Image (cartoon, rainbow, N blue to C red; front, side):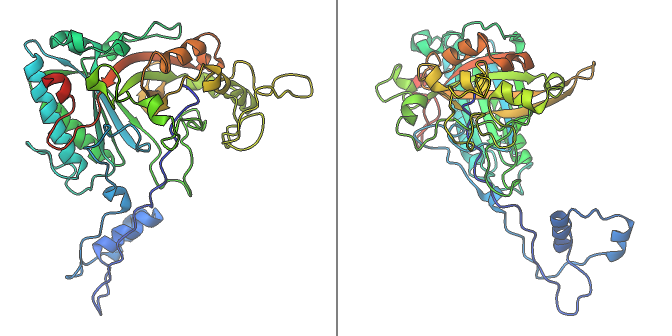
Length: 430
């Protein structure tokens, strides 16, 4: 986990309960208003609630969607969705392997189906075939669906000459404890939304669209704080309770595209405006972490837990003073602090856009929580983004004692599809 993580999106206003009124003389209360009031106050209606009862006003209109439901990301564009958008409340990550007999032609048909399904679902429409109806009552809810190609995809489809050099397998790291069955894959899909049912609906549609062409290799499910859960927009926190996202590159920076996306004259041509996603399942050893004192936790990270400010002083966005010492001459930000090691100016300018999800997959038989971070980072070239930072973390990050990298993947994510085309068309039909 690096200190460069995407700031949480501005909080969307919470759902507003419908303010319908009973007809004149009506002594009851409408069902919608009753439910809206219960949702707003947190009241649980038990035996006493049944005595109140409700009636439905004949002229009652459907309540409008909140802004949470109406927020929409665009499928068509220069870049694929799901990269620069704010963090979403729910996420699913999947990798697929092509089945025996599936070649370039069948892969093209699959990406064509997936792209049409993504376009429709992101617009709040039903999927084109056998829609399950799971999300029929919801709006788009900021749904994004993103597609990528793994290293093995190119050999299976006879496209080895089109495989990018940047997609060469990641080196081994000493902190790796990788489960090969939950790593890599021919195809990768990222799904994010601010509503759990909208995200699940997209997941099922993508799985069904795969048909006989591909089978799921692995699936991971994650979450973030829901928009509107805080009084004002704040940077996200991870499951260690730390603010995680302070130094992420921002789209407003002049060199953002240069760091994150393949340039117009980049190689190969089909990856222009695309990006490379490194995906790591990082387990947090929470029992060990939570035994540390607050001061010890802050020394591991190099930032205050309360507000994310550097230990050298200031606020969350204050530049970290790496040379500041205390009265005993000790560095205020320890030499092995995570935030110190991951700084771009300590890694030759290496930068990546982190857009993670937290995860919790229950409790192990020995009572240890299986929880942590679904780390996703984006960069124009992983050999200049993720790899140098991870190598340095490998050599002395204080946080390494409290995390374990359990799966890994690297995927080439092409640029966005224009109207009338599908994701990856230039690769598969070029």
